[in-house]
Amino acid sequence: MTAQTLTAPAAPPLELADEAALLVREIEQYLTARVRTTAHPFVTKTTAELIAEALGAPAALAAPVLAPPACALRLLPDWVLNFPLLRQLHGAGRQISVAEHLELTALVVERYGWHSGALRSTSGRRCILGAQAVLFRLGYGDEHVALAAGHHLQAVLAARGISEPYHRWNDATGRTRTEVLALIRTAATAARWEGR
Image (tube, rainbow, N blue to C red):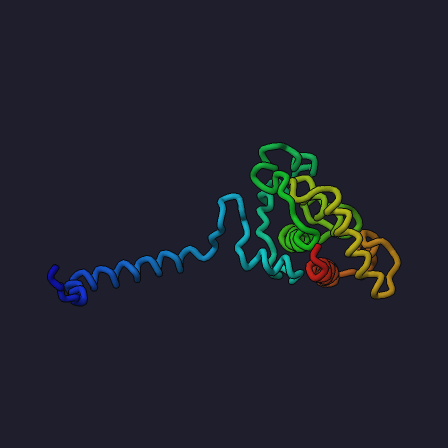
C-alpha cells in the first residue's frame, strides 16, 4: 500500500463564495420580513406573545380595529345592524376581550358622536349603552363580554364614590363627552391589566 498525502480541500471559486453570501443575505431579508410567523398555520400568536400570555403579562394596549357601519347606516334603526350581511362585514361573531369591547365602545362614541338621555339620537349619536349595543348587534363579542364591560364601568364609578348605574351617570345633567370617554378608557385599561 502506498501512503497518500492528505491535503486540505481547495477553496471554492470566488464566484461561488459571492453567490453563497448573496443567498445568505436574501434568506436573512426574507426571514426578517416574516416577523409574525408561527409554528403552525392554526396558531395565531407569535411565540413571544404566547410566552407573555403564559407569564401573565398584560397584552399590548393598542385598540383593535373597528369597522363601523357607514354613516348612512347610523341613521337606520338598530335592528338593521343584526342583518347577516352587515354582521359579516363587521364583527360577525368575533370573540373579543372585555378590554377590547370597552376600547371599541369608546371608538363608537368618538366616531358616531355622544348622546345623553336615550340609547341613540335621530342622527345616530350614541350613549355608552347605545355604543355597546352597536357592537353587540354587529357581532363583536357576546352578551357575557358586554355585561362584564358594564361591571368594569360600574367599578370605576364605584371607586370614585358614585353608586348610580353607568347608563344613568351618562345621562346626568352637565355630563360631557370628554368625561364619558375618560370613564370608558379608564375601565378598558383596568380590564386590560386584569387580563380580561
